[in-house]
Amino acid sequence: MPNHIPPALVASLAGLPGFNKETFLAVHAAAEKITSVRLNPLKLATAEKRSEVLITLSPQGHSRVPWSTEGYYLPERPSFTFDPFFHAGAYYVQEASSMFLEQAVRATVDLNAPLKVLDLCAAPGGKSTLLQSLLNEESILVSNEVIKPRAALLADNVSRWGAANVVVSNNDPRDFSRLPGYFDLIVIDAPCSGSGLFRRDPELIPEWSPENVVLCSQRQQRILADALPALKEEGILIYSTCSFSQEEDEMILDWLAAHFELENIPLPVDEAWQIVPAVSPKSNCTGYRFYPDRLKGEGFFIACFRKRSGESPRKWKEQKVAALAAKDKEKLSHWIDMSRDQQYLLHQDEALIMPPALYKEIALLQQQLYIRKAGIKAGQLGAKELIPDHQLAASTLVAANIPRVELDLPEALLYLRKEDPAIHTDIKGWALIQYHQMPLGWAKILPNRMNNYYPKEQRILKEITGL
Ligand code: SAM
Image 1 (cartoon, rainbow, N blue to C red):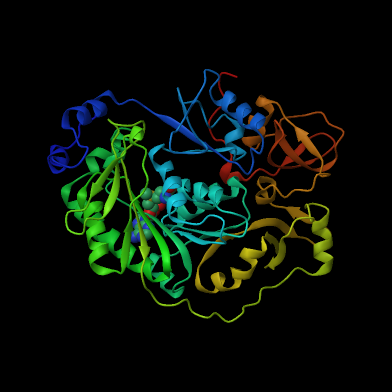
Image 2 (tube, rainbow, N blue to C red):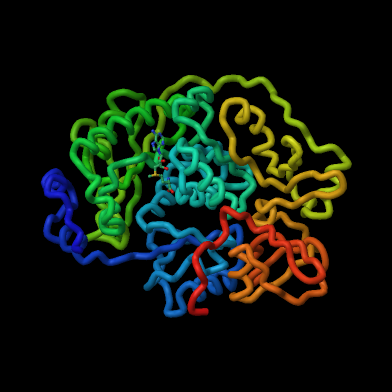
């Protein structure tokens, strides 16, 4: 069925910069599927590893997403489910226009500084994993999602990405008013009416209505008003949607300019990219429109602001968290590369690892937010030994001398289905299961079988075919 764009949407876009009714309708009718991925620099440290992953994804080649350092278009959509590199967190499947967030961050924020960053509407984690790749080790990212099951999905995707400087929280935007002036950068990738995704996801089309656009715009205002107190003076707000509607884009910029002390920041945009600068009708703020008939990506809108004044950050009382006892640290030392500058915490009976920058903040964040994940969970501290957690396997912190079992593709897929790939090995006990040297998870190797510790909720459910 051809994508039937609502006439009321088309009529509402007439006259907007960059809008061309004929090419807009034609590109939706053609319904081309564009596939793009963004590589994980934390896990793909060498050029060889990067090209190995890209060749596996697409033996017939790939091309760069022009506004992204790590983004690539693939000529065809492979089966990500049946690619162990996907489960190993080697890359994230992300729509290309959204990757422009990188340009917005680079143009507005000093990425050499230690930053506190909030991604307020973060699930499933596309923008958060991108932000994490841009931040230095002294920076922290709070990745928040209000809807509980979506927060669980976000936590899984952040775990897979493997970085230790991220906190995943499950809070309503208004809860962040408890952290006045705290963040240097707040990204609000707002829930919206979704018209920008109509080419990719035509099933969204029947849900669109002018009334819903108005409701979305009111909700966007509420989210922004709730979040802005948590931004420090001189801090940066990045606002984005995947809607074409002015009510959710330029008119939100006007509303922000009218209600808050914010300075709009124009971004450098290469003309060849075909991204369209759009000036808001009342306050002349500039945002950027992405149209699928002009560039290789879906519909998107983004704008940046600097907060001119605000409440000064509260002086927080030094908070304490439970450090790990020496005997528990001893249990960890077998599993973890302890040479790195990181802190070890006890949370209930679990050991957590985090960089010093996050350790400094964690007690405060824990007091103010509902935290689902902080740093890397090393595992459960049993009476005798540590039961390693999947988060540790997915991190880059596992000690080099931990036994590793390399699987081929059919074996790796069986392992990811939480089955027993029936391997032959001399290794006994705990082992890190790998595919092309990339950790997939833990197993305990017994004389005739393996106990597969891959998380049940992340296992592949689809039948394996055609291998
Ligand atoms: N940033 C995400 C990414 O790049 O993967 C996509 C975010 S999506 C556009 C918007 C998110 O906002 C959804 O996960 C949705 O659950 C969440 N959301 C819905 N209602 C919300 C609300 N009232 N306040 C804050 N977030 C909300």
